[in-house]
Length: 605
Image (tube, rainbow, N blue to C red; front, side):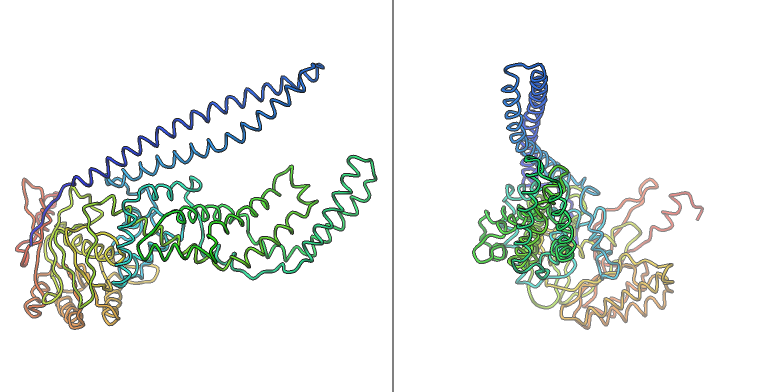
């Protein structure tokens, strides 16, 4: 077994150059629109000052002041209308700049702590999530995730947490290949909506949209319209025709009683509607952009079909609801609030929102899921585009198998990543990895595990070639004791080992990764227990790797041959400093660096 270190390829340089070019173009656009924004702001101020001068002219009785004031107000209104699109364009260009800046940070390996960590998806009971750095700062999820919605994040996380079958993986591969070159689409999806990461809560929004209708019939619309007409007439009479205030007071009393009577049903129909307006607009924007995109791969074509209902695009239905919610939100404007109360704005719009939910609400969960899957595929496609030397693996059915040439850890920058060869399957089911401290044993297990997870999620892998079968994965690389639960590390480890053994009895073959198996007990028990567990796992057809410092455990390969082999990592002490090449070699390690390390830091041993 050999190890190699590969530099970046011309393809990697090309994607960096593309990002740098687009960054320059979007920066120029941002600066241009910002300049227009400042000019219009200055002009608006000048027009406003001109209006003040006209008002003063009216006070002085100037003949042209009225005309000047009217013209100033018209110009000011037009500039307000024109200013908003300019600001949106400037904001969009700014987000595009940030998109390519983040892309360059990812390509250059400086992305840790800059993205979405996904820690909410991490459970320490999962058989490998914590062990393989799936979530958290500097995790594989943070490296992959470009999703704008929680649904996209949740779908991507679910793909990393459970293996897909070969058919699903093949469909994801086709979708990734289709989206990989579509940088314009990825840019559009990224810059849509507000500049704050979207907070679409799939479960909450789906529950609200799918709730039963509560405002059926025409009684509420008719009563609301009738009361609005009477109230408006009373208000006009009082304001312009010097009628008594008493009719308006009577109307206000009737309106109050009416509002209390229907209030519970209206609140049930609207729920916490103000929270969902921005979510629905973003969802509509995402769906509309996806509806314009032609797709050919089976997965993306199926998701595109899921976005339509009876021939009507999902985005059109959502925009109708978003407009209703915008109108509803206008009741909060301090100038419009009295008119909204007089016109029974809330119950009238609540009836229309309730009708929309009955007509289209049941489809929202499907739309959110479809967008989530597109975002998850888009995240993987972006990763594939930014790592052009990482191939899509061959995932095949059959007995457990993991064969890799030039495999490395995807979180280690390519320019410093040392790659090795791994072959697990018939006849070798077990590799026993020995070696000194810091030589690369645990990293090798993580390398195998994380590439297996990426492969079974449908993503590219850090290898020249990888062939594997779908497998359950179980690992003991980051076992922790628990003071709160009164568990020692050894107890936590044997509990996880039992969980992994139970996985080997499931429908999928097992890939196990044991770091320092049973090192919390004495050598005799460690060897006896380790051999029994490994022998049992191999008997089920499982494949895997185990690291050890205990050479007695390394020698159990003799009893398990030819299904088990020894490999090791070496080190050298040069001028009092430990040197490692991180290359995996056949056989058992010949020496330990523990005493040398102790002496190197000044311990008298």
